[in-house]
Image (cartoon, rainbow, N blue to C red):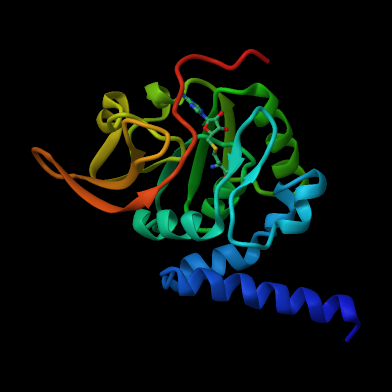
Length: 217
Ligand code: SAH
């Protein structure tokens, strides 16, 4: 084995170890995350830190989430291979790539065309064919594709957005960071029951805010 091959294998082991030590135990999630090279989603000089368990800046003043948070959110979403999933907040495309290995179909939307355009191209190059990348204000969901089995929001809302709750199928799960400020937010798991919604608070998190309207690009 060359030095490069050794360090790559080691890097992968450390990456997976960090996920497990932070509570990501679901085998399917770990396998999906093992398949997706986070280094491909981080550009510039931050790419050196792509395998560390930390959020990193991407373009448009946004961030690629911390791998263990991606893992915990994906685990809470409990995706099955039959599911149609909506992600609000494409960002770098990393979370969507992880979901592509778990779901039947993924729709991911971002308000910045400057983010969705390169992600679309990257998924074509990676031969990821079950993800549709769209530019839209995701707080209104994607009515033309609703209902969804799973919805994941990767930007923080003050409350779980009403249109997203309405587009969740009965028995469906939504995972969303909720908080009144940039600093105090909680990850919430919402399950749609027959006549109501069940809310479970999972863990403190820190996300960029869910903003209204399209980005200026
Ligand atoms: N899931 C991403 C990280 C997302 S960062 C990843 O894996 O890299 C949060 C993203 O939410 C940003 O890209 C931001 O542009 C987007 N966003 C914020 N408000 C939004 C809205 N109303 N609709 C769609 N996207 C939104």
